[in-house]
Amino acid sequence: MLNSTMRSLVSRTACRSQSYFSTSSVKNIEKLWENPWKHAIPEKTKTFATVEEVPVDWSFVERLMPIEVVPEVPKHDSYPTPSGWTPPTAAGKSHSYYVRRRPDHLLPLYLERKRDLLNEKTLDFDYVELVTVRNVDGDVFACEHDLRSYLEEQLGHSVASHVDELKGRIKIKGAPRLLIEQFLYSKGF
Picture (cartoon, rainbow, N blue to C red):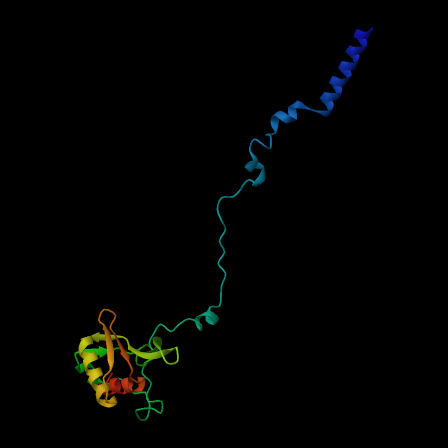
């Protein structure tokens, strides 16, 4: 009798386990831990990206871009202008050196302040002003010699200068920028 009850109980649980847990559905589905990337990333149906050209009005962006073409030299009634500007002349090309102007037609003169020696009386640093002439083409040393002799004649004392031939630059210590500008304008640059 015990055997018969056990058989019926086992047969009932077996039927229940088949109805609740179907082994056929487990065999068809891959387990999540065996390939997690397959379940995390959706499958791609298309491999090509779609491209759509959108018409854009670039006029607002183009006005912010730098000017690629150098504008013409402005024409004035008389020279020098009230600001002191003078256009380049043909006399500037007759020297063994030439100072090219910037795209805005100004001379390439740059002022730089550097800390000099310590003043022992005030225990403060003195500052020195250096004027750099850039874009010197040709014989840079001849340009420096002419410029230094002109400045020493105008100022009445010697002037220190440094030539960087590879970059085409001349640095001058202790000379006002306006005198250097006058020298370059007088040479026709």
